Each structure stands twice: as C-alpha cells, then as structure tokens.
Image (cartoon, rainbow, N blue to C red):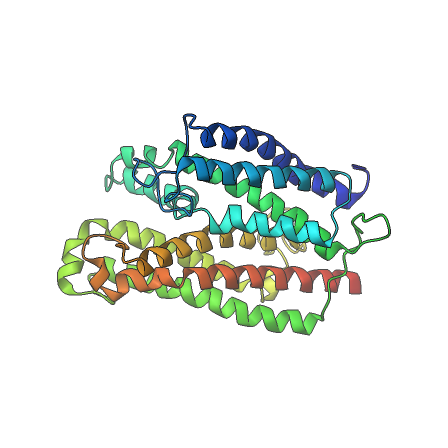
Length: 345
C-alpha cells in the first residue's frame, strides 16, 4: 500500500484491524468448530446474550466465524493493494454490517453506554460494583472485537464504493459525493427528526418513572421497578444528550466550534468528527434494538418481570433500529453536505 497518498493513509488502520482479526478468528473459529474451549456464544451460559449465533451449536457458529474471517482476510489483502472493486467492496460492507450490526446484541450498548451510568450508580450506592464487572466477560469483549472488525470492513468497502476508481482500481482520494447540498440537507433534516424523536420518547418515559409518573406503565409496575428508575433516568439523560448533539448535524453550530472554547473557538469542526461519531453510536443502537425486536417477536421477555404487559416498558426499545438507521443516514448526509461545501470553496 502506498501510504504517501492521503486516502491510503486513512485506510491503513482499518486494513490492519481487519487483517489481525481475520488471522485470529480464522484460527479461533476452526478451534471452536472442532469443539475447542472458549466459544463465546451460548445463550444458556452466564455472560452470554441474544446474538444470532447463540442458538447455533459451536460447530456451526465456529464455522460461520471462520468463513467470515476468511472473507475479511481477502478484503484486507485487496484493500492493501488498492484493488477493491465494486463487488468486493459490497461484500466488505455486507460482512461488516453482519459483524457490527446484525450479529451483536445489547451488550455492546451496555458496555459502551451503560458502563458510565452504572459506574455513577455504583458510586451513589444504587447498584453493586459486581454488576459492572459482570459486563466485562469474554462474550462481551468478543462482541466488541467483532464490532471493531465489522466497522473496519464497512469503512473499507464504503470508501471504495464512494471514492471513485481509475483503471488500476485504486481509490481516488478526491472524493466528490453525488447529489446536491440542498438534497443532502433535506434528507439530513428528515433523518435527524427521526433520530431525535426516538431518544426523546425513550427519555420521557424514564424521566417520568423517576418522578413517580407511570408513563406507559401501571402504578403497580412503577412501584415494582422503583429501585432501578434512577438507572433508567440516567440512560434517558444519555439518550437526551445524544438527541441534542444529533441536532447539530443540520444546524450551523454543528459545523463550527463554539467561540468560548479555548484554541478551537470559531474554527470549523472537521466533518469526519461528528459524522463518524454519529455512525459509531448508530451501530450499537441498531444492534440492541434488533435484539429487542427478535425477543419480542419470539415471545421472550423484554425488561423486568411483568414488562410484557406494560407498553411503556418495551415499546421505546422497539424503535431503536429506526433510531440507529436514521442516525446513520443523518451522519452520512452531514458528511456529504460538508464535503460538497468544501469542494465548492
């Protein structure tokens, strides 16, 4: 790979991540397929969850991971040589979505999002510190690794698809996205509206419970979950903060640092920072939401005992896949619009 080219330099990290993951999980997948120890997917085992691989035997799940690692290895080699064509780029994106979005469950969000909330709750004496340690099990860490590999695959595939190609198949660093600024702004507004409405809806229910208002639930169920309402309110606060930041994807203050910030005040915000941050958040949100939808459709419980009869206790989570998808679209629309404006100058 010619790292002197700016676009190629940005490709080095995802290529390395995919390459290391490919070699590691090709070996691990084969070991697990042959009955070796350490298989991280097992719904009946402590620390496991509700991923797509949990219902499958280790022989099948290990084989799926080994094949995925082999595909990822091919993508890494082609990307390193700047030879990702449209077909292989699509394969990379699909494989990445499978690893980072479809396969995981809510533990990605728990580890990345719930952990700070749980830490504050533990310091306040609301929960035991042992609950925090329970999040850092091998099955959970495995999902973080899969997500990192999946995101890297998506980055390689998307960059190849959007980057334009010459005869050699290399990526053209002068990215000029299709469409118009007005079109990107319009799409961004619609997507942002959805990406704000869903977390606000979630936050309203959780804040209401903390204040003793049974939003979407019965008085009896509110009394039953009274001890954990501070945790729900904390998660609602995180969701509300995310909603406020999402608005910046369509507002001028999402493009320029506030003037009161030292050194950065008044300077343009790098377009990739808000866009990539929003994309990174959209993946675990979608994964968690898809898990809740799968559980609800299969008749499994979503939430504490008795939650299945309480609309407010499970309905907001059913909307999380919509939230994640809308956030991803809003982020991409923001990135396209900012790059159009940059090229226009």
